[in-house]
Length: 264
Image (tube, one colour):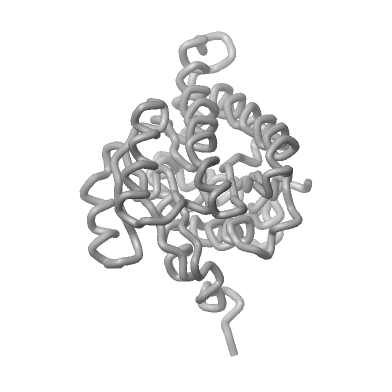
């Protein structure tokens, strides 16, 4: 019998798919990369500074991962990323995960409050979450058309529903990305492209959330129906649905994956 608390049931789930995961070498991105590989996909891992981690993944999964450096906020870099992936694999990318996060630390005590946050703080997050994601989607479209379909998955946050910490810039940027998710879903549906979002809460643990005090994790766990803080692996497994043919009739949706902490 398969243990329902493991990912073992997803083997072969994404056979034949070629998935790009931005920021795919560390944190949640690495968890999504590993889950997608286990499910049978070939994963293109985009990285900016995490070369050693990306190359280690490539070595760990030979023939299943292609690591390529690119800054998603740079349009020329993203164009090169897709060209390099096509040259290496000889086939189009069929799904993208917009996961890359510009520098951010999930420590509410160390974030600027409403009276001190600057517009440049907002611009910084908008550049990564919105410009980066839009640029990646635009460069993916020719490959989607060639394949006859495409899957886009944007990474959001449950802070839309429960803004309990002053992550003003981060939450605003992810809120804008949710709007893009829905407007792009409306337009790109005619091209057989689905665009969705999966939103976690604080994950235990990623590089970004490592600054979070243990007491905060404990409070969240006590307030969550499942009794624990969601892991990157748990969110990654849920993300696979949106990259697979099983989600072909689902678009413009935002799935909250936080153990039931936030309701709808």
